[in-house]
Length: 263
Image (cartoon, rainbow, N blue to C red; front, side):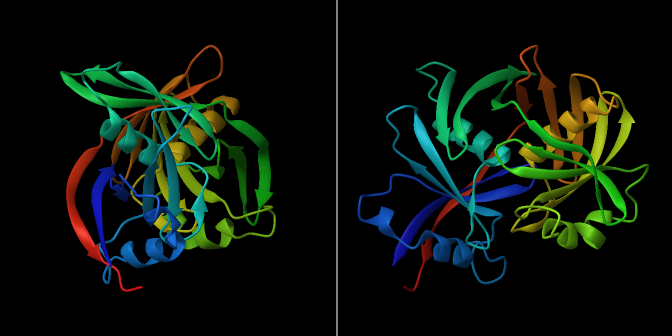
């Protein structure tokens, strides 16, 4: 079976994207397809598989499968990729995308002479600001998906590689979590390393960046607008007076192709 796809990336967080799916193709085994096509050596390679589906309440619906086939409730990087993909210069720059964690307001923002996706991730919920897990005290934050955020003085020892998998599946949590280690450079700048739930080490995580800034603000470490440096690039996180968190950062279209799936 031949499956046409697009590929996009946001700070190295990359996705196989399927659009224009027919009624028949919507019955495919997408968890199995995600596992197959997202393999780095035996497929095309990606952090996740993203479906663009019709929606009666938004411009489109976003459905995400992690590379291991599990369903992801939310992904800020994928949301920005779809914002750019669905943007119509003949229509409003602001529109809505439906996700498993609710309707998200998005827009294409002019920044330094270029159009950049800006997405409203909503209001994060801090489940536990100072939670002891193993040797770490971190913050458990939910922003449509769960994140465990740990601030450290330095990240040279790559703690996400040493501890990410253990913390991701730790019995302390009701379900597996994304794990982030962050270093505060200034109250308006941080560096973070990422261990993504169901994926492993990734170059970026949009909801993780917002959750980290949320935790940092609650701890008195960060201000309302923060530049977040991740291994794959930089994004901007801001919090408005209502408590909504916004993620801004460029994305790019990397190509299109046809995947020969043997089912």
